[in-house]
Structure formats: structure tokens, C-alpha cells
Image (cartoon, rainbow, N blue to C red):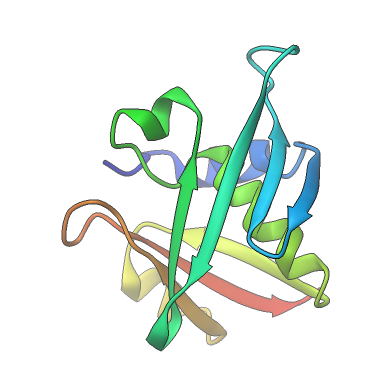
Length: 119
């Protein structure tokens, strides 16, 4: 299941602190529990597909594109001088005329579209 208010979630994700453990694993702070952090794993597939896993409750119950995964992806993009935006529909992402990626969800058509632009 993907989030309904993706732009609000994206704005919240930009305020989360991220620490890199290795090339594919990051620790992202939790805003709901100051004594807890979440582990986010990122894997890039062929054809611009992105696979993420997070230890937060939203992700545990089949939610995807949580604020923690967005923060982790934005962190990786910033290291390359890029900035990301997240979209619920492909046509919205393609309209931006930027490079497009697809974050796959658990079910077909449950993914989120990502655009990347120079920061």
C-alpha cells in the first residue's frame, strides 16, 4: 500500500537525519520515537527500478515509500548533487521532464515514481 499524501510525507522526510552504514544500508532517525532509529536498505534494479526495505511499522505491514525510505534515497541522491521528488502516478512524474525511477511496491501498480534533478 502506498501513501496517499506523498508530498506531505516527502516534506517530512527532508527533516530526518540519515547516517550511511554501507553503500546500500542507512540508519534513519524516527520522529515518533526519539530513542529508536530505522534501518533502510536500498537496492537498484534494472531499468530504473528501486527496491527499498525499512524497519518501521508502516513498512512491516506492507506499506511502501515511508518517510524513512524517502530520506535515505534523498541522502544518496544528494551525494551525487541530485534532488528527488516522489509521485503517485507515472504521468505526474513524466511531466517533470527529468530522469524517472520507479520504487516498486508489494503489489503491481502499488509503486511510487521518483524524479531526479540537479540540486
